[in-house]
Image (cartoon, rainbow, N blue to C red; front, side, top):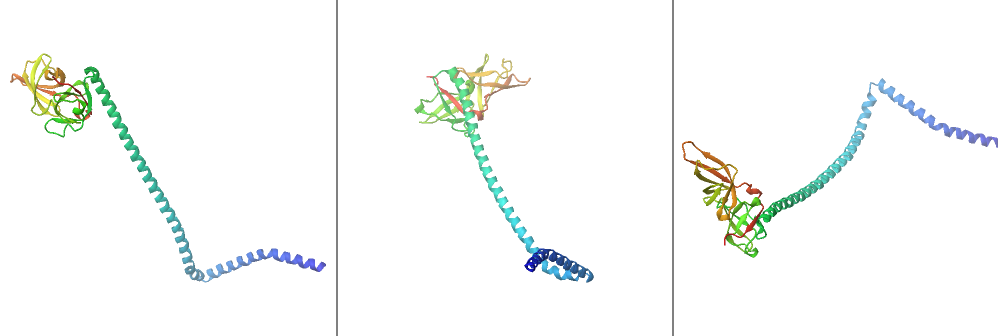
Length: 270
């Protein structure tokens, strides 16, 4: 019985000491190899290196492949995110442009409401349907016709109550307006106590010759009896020479035509 216990105890000790012995043996072998390599002037390393290069190369390739996959995955994610952001920005810009247009329309209509307060409820508001520069003849189109009660000769007003022109042609849903300042158009006007005839030059401009001593002031309103005494513009500047008995005056439309979006139409002279 004692012998069996001693044998088992010996086995346990032997099993426990084996790892330590293995470590010592491995350490000894490594030291022997290193010593031999030093003694042989690196001959062992030169033989082992070719076997290690493929292993190292494979490791680098594996790392590069994984890193490359991550790079392309990250790059595609960034591209997708950029595209999504671009679409959102374009959508927001379109919405903002729509809001700006609505605000401009609202402000323009508010200005026209001031004209209706002065003129009463006898007219109607209509939108501009063409560019003022689209025709070289000093005409433009409004979005209202005889179905809305528009007639030839009706007076077309801008904000501030200034006369843009008169309706010259009427269709069902649109009308053609000839401007006061159409090239070559003559209009009898008065400013202060001085009456004179202006000649249109287009683009909201006209000119006239008046006696040099005429009492006229820059910025003074210019009115036309043909439009029931309403203002058609203001005096821009006055040019005169001491050698001439006459002065040239320039009459201008005081509002930028490119900003006019709506007009107010009132009945003309019966």
